[in-house]
Image (cartoon, rainbow, N blue to C red; front, top):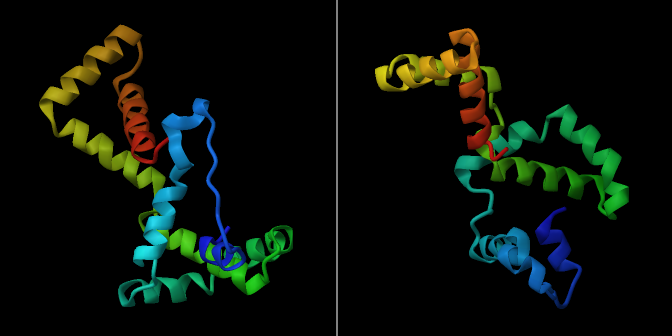
Amino acid sequence: MDLEVELEKRDIVVLEMTEENLKMTGYGFIEDLYDHFTGKNRITEEKQSLYNQLSTDQEIKTRAKEIALVLGYTVSQMERALIKNKLKNEWLVNFDYETKVQNVIKAIKSSPKRLVGVKEKAIRRNEALEKTLRDDAIWIVNRKLGR
């Protein structure tokens, strides 16, 4: 959903929480509102070329057509919302998971202290060093992705 479009439709927004959910107050909504009203998510000149590139992405166009009616958006509003969401996570646009895993493996191998730790773990697990290296690298990449 596009926060900008949703806010334009409303005169008032009420955020209601129960005691059980106070530890996650707003679920990021308050931060998103702050970013919206301070202009953090504005499409700047630096992001304009990436925005233009994403606006020709067939996957985005197809997805927008699929979900626009469900959310009550026009197809162009939905495309813009999907593009803005990708821009918010710009570092993921051309993200190559396997390359990141390989880079972490190289980093572990280049650090004698870290490599010794992985070797010890491989011995404890009774598995090949390369498997343990890859498992650790995958774990690190997934943590960076918030998984």
